Length: 349
Image (cartoon, rainbow, N blue to C red; front, top):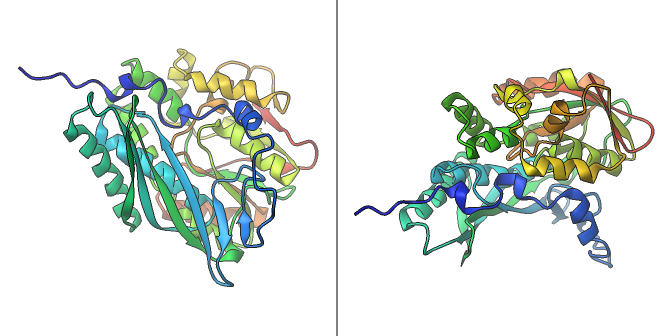
């Protein structure tokens, strides 16, 4: 008699970057935590909630270190492994760096999932790392109640090409590299309401490596970068605003959205993380009238392996969009601007 294998998403209370602790809760947990003594070589630490740590080795090299892992966002184990690996490597690209190797992070309910399923997850991660041209050189595993997979990723960057999330300038144009809506698609999938086209769109975007990052970082007109993940577009843009001591203005109608996402959002298929994200923004977001419900859910939607968010000079926009296009990011779009004033985000229709 064959043994039924449970759906991966049925084994976890959340999935993908929607598992992240809400930004407001995280900020409270981290109060008073951090290095009290400055380290001269540490170019990027915890100060501005940036995507990765960066430590300068010499005049020509700085090492980027980051880790990212989560519970299943899809049921196919190979796809889960690919998504988790692409998401982890994204932080290296967002700092302007190139990955050089990674380490696997694995937590699995060994008595619940068959070995074949776990191997497929590992194979998925290996496939993405092979596409990035790097090895998985080791890792660590535990027997856990919920399935967890991700990577510790290491990269290199020239110190002058490090792109922080905190160096945007007033009048910079904001360019978003990927369409939004991954969290909404994942909510539909978990409720068996996502069709095959929607699933393919979800896999395509979440397994697409953010390879434009290093090339973008070499443009003098690119001042700041981050990637949009679990805190949603608003959460990660607010981090950019606070780090840069600026405000931002975004136009809702300019946001690129994955196919079928608006209809699913209108039907109420959203993640719990969306509401947690919104509650964490406080008074730092102003939505124009009419944007209170469905648009708000799109703006707060947690993105797994989301796109790069670039703040660049106006005369660099054409070059930024051309780089995205060369790397196959057809939906990269101008979505707003950085402005003088309070560290907040205003969203227009």
